[in-house]
Length: 293
Ligand SMILES: [Zn+2]
Image (cartoon, rainbow, N blue to C red; front, side, top):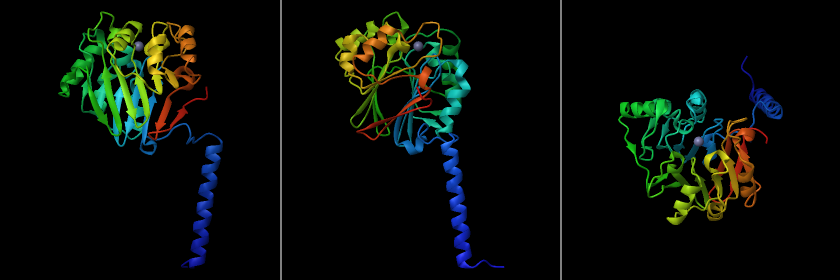
């Protein structure tokens, strides 16, 4: 029997109503949460501070282009790669490694193997140990040069990327961190690696433009970073601290939280909030957290 037009319409309506009901139930019971996990393609321009425990990993995405800043420890290898892939990203315009400590470059070799990477930026200083040696090997196999990011400036989709480094690199690798400023319209982000007070002073003396709405606090919220003059130059409206639960260093330190609180009460830690995502429309910023803080 061929169904009549009316019968067909009724069936279509019933199927639609059932689909809406199932989606509403899944959303109500938390099985699907549209608020907490915007997909890359839907999100326009976004900056995500990925929860990698005690380490750093920041993914910026804009108009089909992606930039990754640091990769977390090598223990997190599957998590970061699968997270980025789950957003539909297969190619990175650029991978910036702020400095060659394993909680920042741990997964770099695996990232280079798993994705098409157009450029690799890392300060011109010697790293040490297993993750650094593996990174150099993986880069050489892919014919990828290790470029010094000093003074780098380029666009990733609608994001403008500027990199700052001290004129003279100090001995402490933390203070050799590439400090990355991202701007999208009126919104600014500052991603500082493990930059400490010594490097902050040098960048201020160099007259680096550091103002930003969102600050990824230096060195996992250590008291040796986020000095008052530095925060005064940044004037953050939001702060993100990337640190693991019960880490050996007691990060974030209370003194840092107090200094940040003088500027903003919107302080997120990846320890409590999981991955923290900022979506920018060029004027407003919307924040999504993986977990309720
Ligand atoms: Zn670190």
